[in-house]
Length: 290
Ligand code: PLP
Figure (cartoon, rainbow, N blue to C red):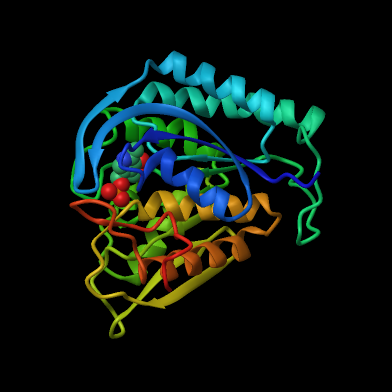
């Protein structure tokens, strides 16, 4: 059986536009099986986050260990981790998982549609969630240090937006040169690839926006047109999940990133307005017209 798999480690958004709910919907659309370990519950509507209820860190980590050792996913994606204890603990657990995976490989071997081999080492996609788009903090004190010390050194692909990259590096980002500087600093923390999303920057070169994909060897700009007036929810979660899905399907990081960014840009052009607040991008309904 061909069974690409991703496990997401993230928070719950009951309005269904972000968090694990979004992640699982995106993975399904890409034809990838999704598991989900929950880090925290939120009270949340399409208009914003109303409350946060973190689960005990030890319990979160036990959940993660149970599901990783069972499913043996080749790709794991993290969203809102919220507590430094979860971030640090996951960094340490990841080292153990890499060794375990090396002994036995993926639990259910599969041949991906692109005929790429299953990754010989598992891949960790980290979306370093700091706050919601409406400004509610989703990361407790000490979280940035835990990211820098424990999780970034084992991260395969990091997907920060501009405020997240600024917070992690201390570098103010005003233009594309600053984006390169901050992304290179993130590589110095041990991250293998950085996909730095430029959407928060004021426009440059007319209406174009750009995301930057960078590793120690490569640098690529993913240019696109800005969609005017988009006020959306869950774009970061959806992009990181699309990227994780493409990696689980066997695409190398540059191709997976380009495909995920292209997918998100199309979705931003046709969001669903599901409630009283912002639109969502994680799901396309059969009846929806592009
Ligand atoms: N809720 C959860 C559980 C999340 O993980 C996130 C972002 O990662 C959000 C809410 C915020 O989403 P947005 O900033 O798109 O509103």
